[in-house]
Picture 1 (cartoon, rainbow, N blue to C red):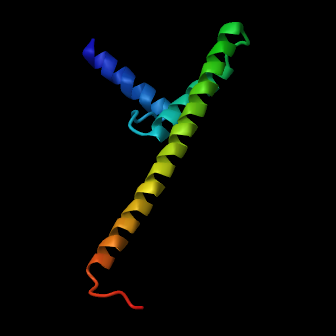
Picture 2 (picture 1 turned 180 degrees about the vertical axis):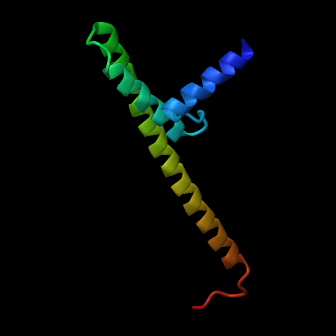
Picture 3 (picture 1 turned 90 degrees about the horizontal axis):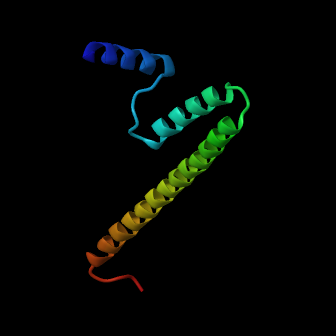
Amino acid sequence: MGRLHQRKKRTVATIYGFGGLRTIEDYAALLETITIETMALENSIARNRAVTAMVATGLRLVEVGELEARVEALEAAADRRSNSDQDDAFTDEKPR
């Protein structure tokens, strides 16, 4: 049963271009695939609920991605400021 499971796993991963869930982009790609497959189903209340949940999840992914970018920008600015402060500490006297 183990080999069958592994073969099926590889086949599905190849068909959908799925390489794992390690980054926000991986999750976004999977969510996109799921949404496309769900939208192809017959219109129903269950399908519409699923799509609504996917939209909410997608919005959360975008929010997390934007927050991640903002944190990285803040960290870079803080690092530049810290380096600048250290450079000032090593000067004997500031010009007047």
